[in-house]
Image (tube, rainbow, N blue to C red; front, side):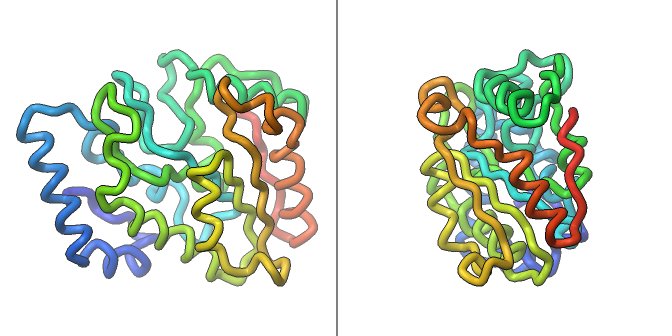
Length: 226
């Protein structure tokens, strides 16, 4: 794979990336691009979540499914888009819940880098996608990488919050040790997409619940303003 592993994740990911599965993933991605297919996000930003949030800084993990598949949207952070790009529907709903939960008005942009720099790991389950083809890179090998990231956060003694929105994210719950003994905190709700947000995402208060747990465990609250 052409992506360089951020320093804070090398110990966790270098063995994974040396595996046959990862080599096959890297070869397949190169072949897809050589065949003229557009892959999002672009090279150099596919591990952006890990770059902005080193392992020893993680306080909260928010898991997404796969990157946005429209031009200019994917930036390597789950649910986020660069400034200047229209805020997608799922993120608009996240902002609605943020305002209802903490009174923070919805920002005009979708760049969540401020969260990431405070310890919110914005990780997608699959880290690439073909343009215009949602879910097209699922099952190609990224799970080994993202499973390892989730397991590494869970293995730490530092109490963390895992926010799993929707069934794809919730499938990762089995990778999270430290739940039964209360060391970590799990928040599971329907996905914030317009198709499911009214089934239990709205009103779930994930931001205040996360901060309550973090503060109670001496880790400090997240400033959820964007």
